[in-house]
Image 1 (cartoon, helix red, strand yellow):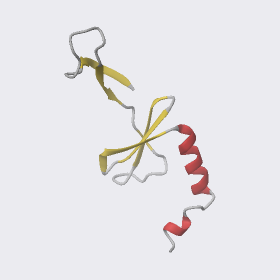
Image 2 (image 1 turned 120 degrees about the vertical axis):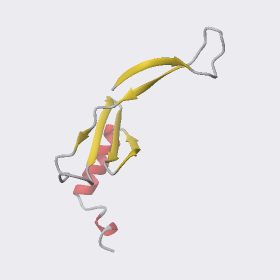
Image 3 (image 1 turned 90 degrees about the vertical axis):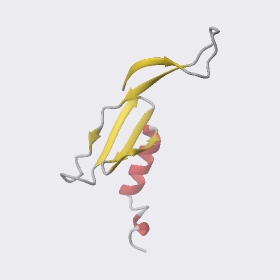
Length: 88
């Protein structure tokens, strides 16, 4: 993730304790388990402490998690702990 165009927050005063913000871009990758076309899962790791996940059909909705939490989720899904959600 790279920052472009640092800008001073409009809420900052003229003193030395200003808040600066930057728009960040992410290097999105498509899951190898996604089919070609729509309904793809995209993932980005902008920092070592953050994982961002989105679905290609709605790219403005982004979930942010940590690598550890995502690992727990993936292991639980592989173990079938969420199967009852699709097979009531």
